[in-house]
Image (cartoon, rainbow over all chains, first blue to last red; front, side, top):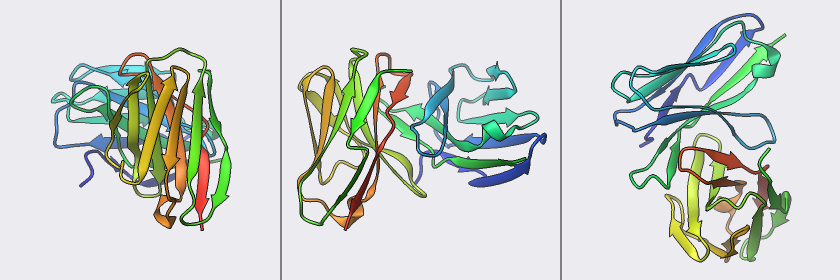
Length: 111
Length: 111
């Protein structure tokens, strides 16, 4: 059983469109991270959210942590080809030293 | 970019042979991690280290061992490689638990 469920698994959109991807769980977390991974490279941290209901913006990317701290969403406005990649969410384990990742959403932005 | 290198970047080996992957950091971060990434499973933690000679198992540690004799180096060893260990392996480092930096990955194929 996957601790973190990400949806959709694959998403292909035209440049300029908006999109939202989700990271869901039945567990409560102290924090949640979003990473982007480009082909052939390691994941890169985009943001960490720690407070229920928190919204963080990173240029055209908007991240929201659910009120109950069980889920999160990532919204991209006016997608660009440079947004193409695998988007992963991650949460810390009970000890805080381990991390658990979702299976990711693979986003392709078509010019 | 955080100073993390992995070697080799690509390796093809045969079933039953030993394999060692190396992760080297220049950031003096305390925590180091080994993950494997497979389609449909996302990133899964194999082992991690919280200091020199201090290591612990992750969720998929069977068939793998690690060693950390210096702050900057974290080695992952497959004592007897199997085809199920064909994967992309990522090393990550962290100084605080909610921010990881990943290396470029090692693509391992076991025939």
